[in-house]
Image (cartoon, rainbow, N blue to C red; front, side):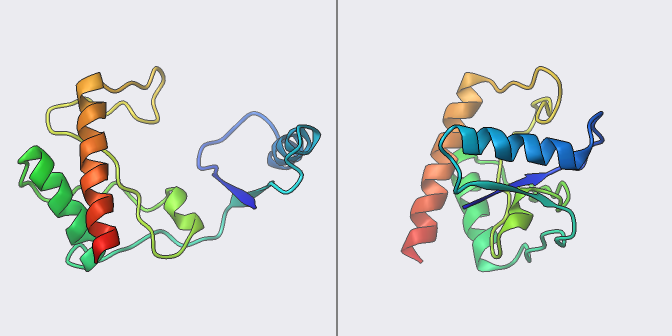
Length: 129
């Protein structure tokens, strides 16, 4: 098993030291089969917004929210780069402050419950195709 970490932001420690410390900690705590690998050279994710996967996710979002706006693209430097054929899919609800990846990140409970329903609908549709 490999744990992928996308380090896009500078840190105050040497990257090699951080990876070694994480791998050492994992091994010392019974996870010797888990290793950290740093994503540095994987291409950004691109999926056609008219393709089957994106349209399925979009339909689940629209059916659960009633929001018919165009899908938002925030870049391609996500965890999704770690595997082929996946895309990051998260709640960016209209009128809400974008707090993800910020200090004191939060989400309203009602938005979290709505996200659960969106994911549930999306998963059901993806597995039935």
